[in-house]
Length: 98
Image (cartoon, rainbow, N blue to C red; front, side, top):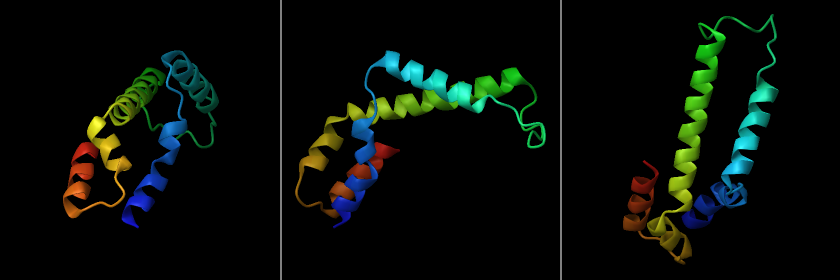
């Protein structure tokens, strides 16, 4: 039961694009959609537009790194292929996500 819940949580991971060109395009699309400034909602969260861009680029790169590690992790793939998980398997899974 626990394995099925974990797999459902990460099923969308397999549907994400794998080519870097499409990921770059996704980043550009995301940036374009979220760069519109609403003067009423803009409370000065970032010190400057450059700071905002750098922070968003950092978080996007961090996401890309984590996604790549999950997709290319053989230990995680072998856990997903198992029918039943033990407590040790769950600990291994959590260790891989850290």
